[in-house]
Length: 247
Image (cartoon, rainbow, N blue to C red; front, side):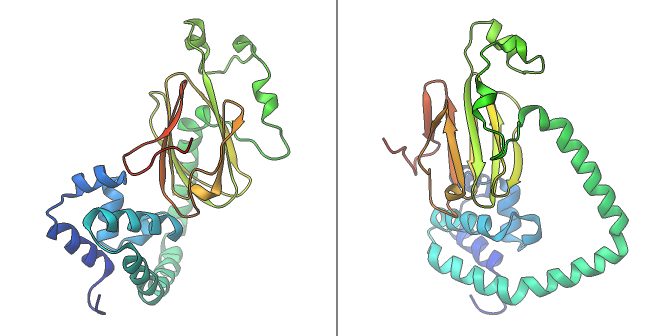
């Protein structure tokens, strides 16, 4: 990649040379199409932190036949030389001009997050033992539980607990509820119950501890690795042909 060719342009040229559409690439890599488009347009301000972007780039490179190691090296060089200083300057300028809009936007997003995501997210910390949440078998003792109607139909829910050991981006969907995204910091996590399935997309597999039905799982991947998991009453598995669950 010469100095005039951006990394996004290089990625797009690889994809177009293989005659792969963004929609097809999204299906192959399990990365949403808007994120792929942001990569090709060098809009890194619209992407998660660099550790997750590297996972996206690695998956992208493999799908279009590029060398992941070379792409990541070019990303490091390009990010250092071309992105950090311009972004910092733009942030300073925009902050002076739009600081009240930003503050209002943050408050609005926080309210939306609380309204839509909080009913499915039960945070816990190291000071509060997660086991205490699961020791009450009577669903009726928890009037706000979203699983009470399902339990009355004879369907037994299963549980999943997560706790971050590193900064990690996740996307999660419980049963038929909409997908939610969140960035967790070390010590943060949550406890979930479902009847049919839980879908979990992890941007940094080595930075998340998982407890499935009160049984701790081994690490499902390395730091910086992107994995997709599906949990059901029968067990759990990696989603996609590129990975298989260890016995």
